[in-house]
Length: 216
Image (cartoon, rainbow, N blue to C red):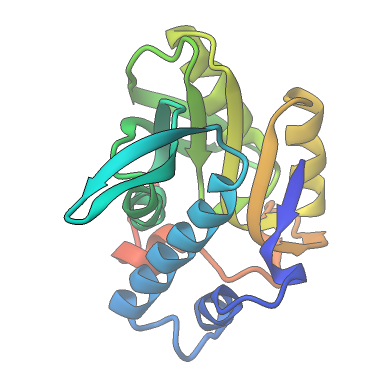
């Protein structure tokens, strides 16, 4: 299943627009806040696909039956750009366990690159719902490599990928690698540059959220 928030009438489209806006995105606090709010909005949408159990809750005047989520969630995030996005999802799923993946592009001469993993922290995934978040889904390589690495920690019942901006190519690659997974996105862009940046995209989400990093 693929959910594209930009195809709906939703206030979160404003958050995406502000993150794209070259004038507004230079305010790091505002960029991080919009990324967090988008994570919360996509978390609410994703919550519709979870399992729920009727539960009796005692009120001051009686008993109300409420449908409460019964799935055990693990929210996984690719560092560093994913941190504000992760916080938004955690606002939606406050009881979730968390996993973190440190990954980066190792660039070679000529412009080619590979995805390198440096660190993973993850609970047991057996029978749980894995939600893996990364703000930019460009080629899909980072999500695919991170997801395969996380699966060393168990077999989840379901996998959801959550991203702010995705490319058509990246969605195709992730769908091919994980055909049973769902992809949730703020917007879908068609083009990738020769260096695998999404166009029109929004730039480097990590740099916009936390400042430019030194290049190797």
